[in-house]
Image (cartoon, rainbow, N blue to C red):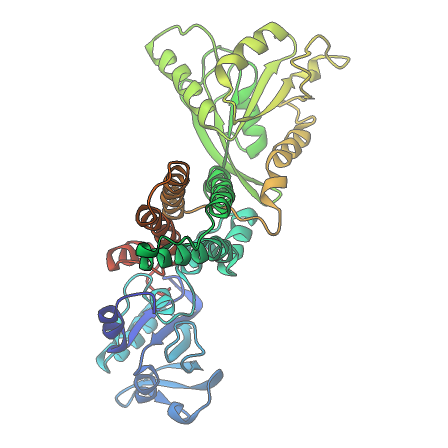
Length: 463
């Protein structure tokens, strides 16, 4: 088991109960019991078949009773250990969705010996019983919180064990050499070398590249879960706020012909082809007229530098290629994707000319009439879809995973430096072990109780 024995003993001694469906009035509500007495406790309040005599993965109709009083007509799902979500005996009671009725049933079950579950405790027990590793357990929370197709797909990939397999492959490649290096220590007086230093150097270089790739994916992975940040920037009166409103189909931002109307950033989310984008309207770039406007422009630059995509919008009637290049020189971050959009083409009879900006493709649109706005949406999707929708690609979305991978990379750096400097086997073995421990912490093979409590505390009660 991944966790300490004292933790496991604590979880074997009691049976937990919680509402697993959202609170509030609904057609049905599901109450979940898990633990060694789950079936016995449910049977003690159930008028119907004797649950203790029924096979696993069966449904049973009957009534929940409190003494002689009927509480509700229910259907009970029976799942025997170890073939259940938690690995323990699990009972799921489907009752009518009245909050009063559901709480009444939970009170009856608590009176018969169950304990109210803590946040994430069902999934925590699944982890402790080896039903899933820690990355899969965390993927459960990500799946529940998924607000877009991309986030949903990435959470499923983690839940199926895709990220775990990546980590295991990294460990498997390193563990054989670790054992050979440590074996040398047992024969230190013989001055023998079991681990080929050249092969180890090649392996460490290869592992560093793979871990660096995973670390690089965090920028996009975090954007997938939080929303890919898209900054809309440009000169005053370029039509940025009108474009934001058009994309949202809502009058979210104030639109005015007066330059400098937008003083602060405005953020709203939108889904385009299953991808969650976080649109950020910003103050126009110009010499600030007052302190408030200057602060707004400073915030524009900050947001633009940290965004995943920069949409630079310009007025085809007043902008020049020189002005666009000047603005981009202060707005664009090297890792930020760029979309150029020429606005107000409804005021032009032909496609505008004279806007050759480093050969970049320009989308000609009208945020006022909506002309070619769909092309802009397609351009946003194209900037991220190739990265997001590779079926076998792994995106790191969890800060804990990111920090552990950084520790593993730092340890491998030490290994490589040690190999270059002819470091002793003892120090090499220590650095290799540090890398392995960092990788093992990701999947939960090495986890403190404090770490587990921090992870599962963000789950909802019934999960």
